Length: 189
Image (cartoon, rainbow, N blue to C red; front, top):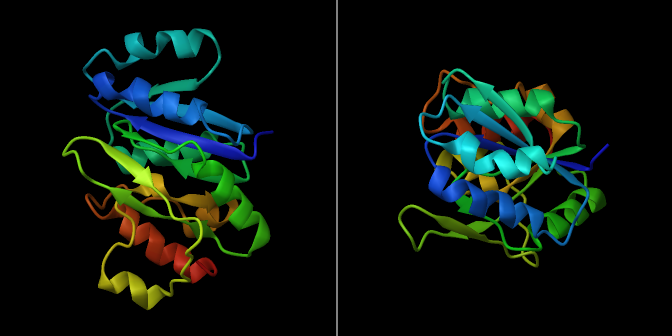
């Protein structure tokens, strides 16, 4: 079984999704699976991903459009890893993202580790993570705002995600903040 399950919800970003998948495949930490959930995307996402599907580099699942929270929950339900990493279909990671985040979760009892991101381009974000500066967050800290620019900055213990109940598909736009609050109640962040 892989240590990390990378969940990529896909909707109408065929022009970006190979960059996202390739940024995972370039990770220095190699013990992962990639699960792409096509959330009823009307574009040619499946055709673009066909080479990754055929070579077994990704696990690919299509569902009727239900929104990003539902797509992430489908991926989490399919996950085999101890940890879950979320990556939006139009974002990319630096090559050491999983390496330092897995190391941190292995060395602590935190349920989640995250970082900051550079939002220099309006449609694409490259996560910039500072592995040398950690800050524990309490539930009250999340009422000051979302500390993560994207769910893709996080690595989460799958057991904690299951205890927290995953994403709430009835919440749009702040479904990640809602999950962070519930995760903070599960254990130390």
